[in-house]
Image (cartoon, rainbow, N blue to C red; front, side, top):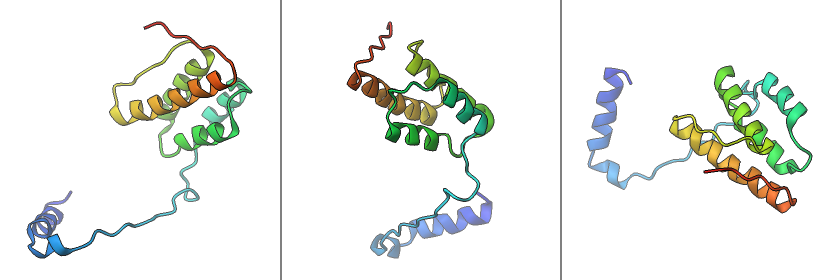
Length: 123
């Protein structure tokens, strides 16, 4: 944040009228603006994703790669492959990435369980 922006932010934050203002919600449609999932990762998933992964989960997995650079997308893709392959669960040490992975791991494991697939991990 630039210094002048910080001053304006601070002034607005401290304003007495700010308490009476209602927050607005802004929607920006970014799906069609170049934030495509990494194509290499998608090809890798095409070769490795098991048939028991549901269509809804497949779509959410693809969406999960949007906005990440090639290196992080590949890290996420590899970690999810290890999950559905039964090799293991990874964490990255980056909070928001680990939260994303955790939610996707749970959905993958739930999908496997619903289809009678047993994936067991040692703690």
